[in-house]
Amino acid sequence: MPVIPVQYESLKAILPYMDPNTRFQISLRIPSISSLERRLPLKIVNLKFSKTGMEVNGARYRLGVYRYSKDNNVSSKIQMSMLPIPHDIDEYGFTISPGINTVLPGDVDLRREILRNSQNDTDKKERLLLQELEVLNKKLVKHLNQEYTNHDEFKNARCVSLIRNQIESLQIALEDVKHRRDNTKPAWTNWIQLTVTSQRRGLIQRIPYNKNLFEAMKMLISTLFGKRRLMISVKTVTIDFHNYILRFPVETKLRIQALDILCWNASNFRAFSQIIDKTSFPLRRLTMKCDSNLSNFEHKIVKKARTLIIDKITTRESRPWMVSRPWIPILRNLTNRHLYLKHQSRNESHVDFVDFISSWLENGRPVGTSWTAIMKEETVKRVLINLKMRPEVVAVSDNYVELRVNSSSSLQVFYKALQPSDFYTKWLLNWRVVRSQLE
Image 1 (cartoon, one colour):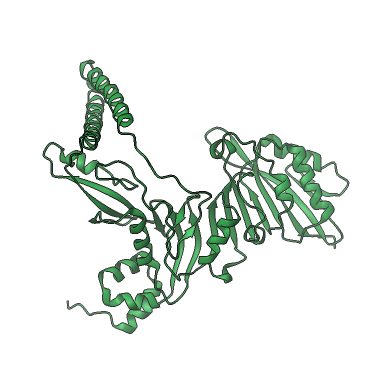
Image 2 (tube, rainbow, N blue to C red):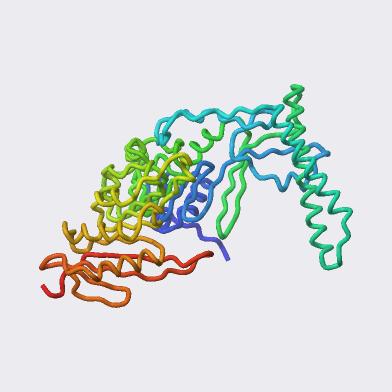
């Protein structure tokens, strides 16, 4: 059957409804279509940026340095198992970070401070590698000399193979140390590798390592998103890092509905606003992975978001020496339509939440406003016990209480059990302002 080529007008009608990743592939492989593709609306459901790449609707684009050797002493098995290195390296294979503080036109500067360049101590690294090699050699001898039953023989063979591969990788790393110490050239050829993976396919492309990774990242994102005549529509943007630079094309704007971020301050929001169209605000949903000490809750992007989700990072993970501030004083000042706290603070008891709910009764909130938190079972049940004793109660049940706010609105408070986790069941406490049925 003869293949009938797709006509220009037909392609113009089809492209806007294609998956963005398919559009990218068509545009890159057929340059004559690239100009048309960039003139048509681009709609993305989920767009995620990380330090090593990005995700577009679940398809992952990752950049790294791939090392290839023609040396016969390096087994093909080891070479095939080596993953791209997610950072720049020098000619000997040591980590370097050129351009880590370079802000190019279009970039979004999310740094809190000047980032430090990586430095490597050759002697220290050699000592650590030799210590690790000694441990692995002892493990190998133990596995080879120990007697196993037929049932465990196959399992032991796999362990031996894994240990030998680890030893060979360490020996290769030691060769790099020796090359740097002796100022000799390694047998590796370095490439920049782009790995694209999705549920349907995997793709690997390599180019010579003649630019730094931050420049390659800028080129990748600019190739996919740059020079578009129309704004790019994105349902949810996730930025999976902070204190770093987001590489972005010049004069490219996003119209977004939801944003998922880590520990942002006012300068981060200000920098990010440069690539977001004004019609995106107020955001439909803002998710902040943060702790109470580091993030800025006073910024208008936070305060005006219709739904604000706080997915707390504990102080121990972010700044071990800090004492975490309580959440409720921060939450009291927020006027978002819907608030959702995913973790209960250790510093706050059921009494604090009863006082918080009482402030809603006293000050009033618009009908439709709601607040949700994931808490311990003891906390949610004690909250309801206390609320059921208030004079404003108009209806009660085992896990529910309704309290009168004024003549036109009521506050409904209830809890329910969520799916059990590995250790305990989490409980959801919710309160919302509704129009009074007695009005």
